[in-house]
Length: 139
Image 1 (tube, rainbow, N blue to C red):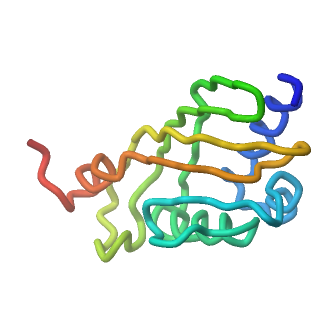
Image 2: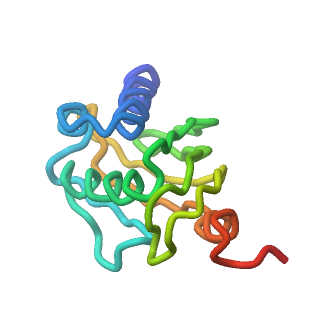
């Protein structure tokens, strides 16, 4: 996949995760895509699987926004570093809303084919989130 196409896919993906737009999800994510998220023991599949994760995050952090800080592309694989920011205004993994603002990093690998995302392995800083919402003490 040419570099410009990869950049375009990633830009559309960031637009999708920041808006939760279902049409955009179906445009940028393959129906056969497989996502490995630390919040789910089994892989999630397709646009609906990703929308499930976005819904979970938006229910806890309604104003959540991701900023794509940098990418490294090799062939059809993209390594991406994001900053995730939001306000803890809903329950998150059983922790009631604290009203605290969060800002954490995430490192993800994306696998692309035919101009769409076909897979992701994500590793957000969940410890940082839990510390910033007051669920885990900061050393």
